[in-house]
Length: 255
View 1 (spheres, rainbow, N blue to C red):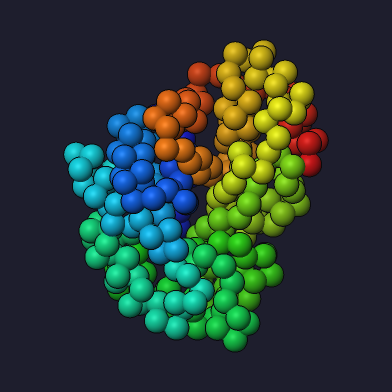
View 2 (tube, one colour):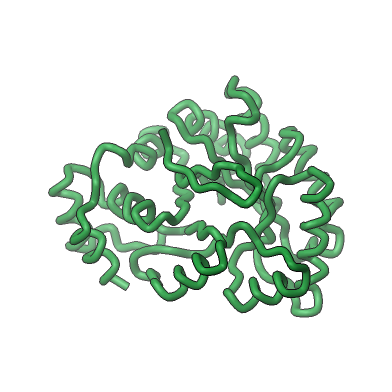
């Protein structure tokens, strides 16, 4: 069973998600189908990715109940002034009825930060989305929109990898009760680093699995992406080994 973290509405967010950035339509469909067959129950897409309809088709064709799959999509800042219309388009493309998490992809211009957040909250109140959050926001921007509306983002999706590990930034999110989703964790890591290769050798796994497991040790959501079924399966297979506290400390020190 995949480890989860509970969001404010009680929704369980699986810590292992499947990312779809840069997956072209057919590859997105086939990869999401494979991911769901392998055991992923969290799929991440975005308006920007232009594959929402393929992701939605894969979810429908999986044969799984909609309630079993956590679906995330994202709003482009350029669409913030017509956020509701953009979301309704996403929902038509996905065909999922609602999304479990709707993020704004990057901060908007300063004067649009609060109105955009208010629009997202309005969509949540209307039942179109279960949770709303942000991406690439600083703690200060999170505070700005929270103080203006009295309601804080459930999630902040930001780049995270061993080289970018920032315990102080992680604590800033934890103190606010905001879940951190890390993206580009493998892309931004030197998988040939001797620290990672030695830990991988000892546990008889791949360096990529070590990095992904390290994220889980810190309760950071991970979104690995691949169009190869074998890689999709390997990235999900993280429960058969445990990093030691010394392993985690050594990986932390790569920052």
